[in-house]
Length: 221
Image 1 (cartoon, rainbow, N blue to C red):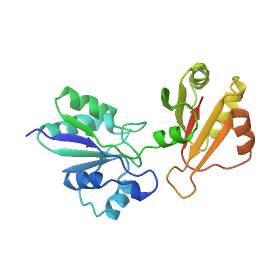
Image 2 (image 1 turned 90 degrees about the vertical axis):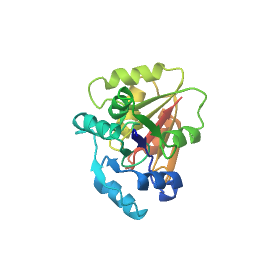
Image 3 (image 1 turned 90 degrees about the horizontal axis):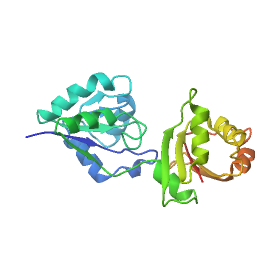
Image 4 (image 1 turned 180 degrees about the vertical axis):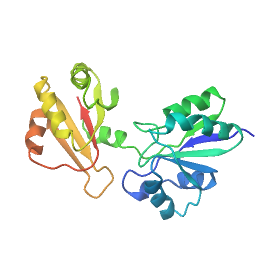
């Protein structure tokens, strides 16, 4: 019997966001590929999941893809998790899916936790059509990417680190986007969850001098 590869979302904050199905799949899998085995190990321990964990991250993904697809071809069920949220969304996974599809391996993705959709819903900005940009380039090509998103007619959603959020807001203003409506959500599903809304200029004033923690989802009209 051919095996399968199953992408399993894990909580981005509140552990109650873990689904019954996700727990069952992780317990029944032959192996779990984890972005960070230490982080995922704590989660598995909490839910009493004893399935072997193997490292699978951006630094070894290219080398490991062939092996894990061959294991699935031989009949193994392989579960894939990231540190938090849905694997394959701004996290390792795309190469594994592509190779699995080429080799006729069934690939599934369970519905579950992701930061993108909750942030988009609570932004108060149009959700009928949107573009997701993942993380913007840190250096080369960053200004070009920001100019393009300011020309976008759809709502734009992207991820940003707390270390660069102030820089992003300043860049949006410098490139003529000061009057754009923006929403910044952080710590989604955690104790200190917060969403800051307004024009880019208004939000710039509200966050000036503040140390914002946690991964950010930025939504721009």
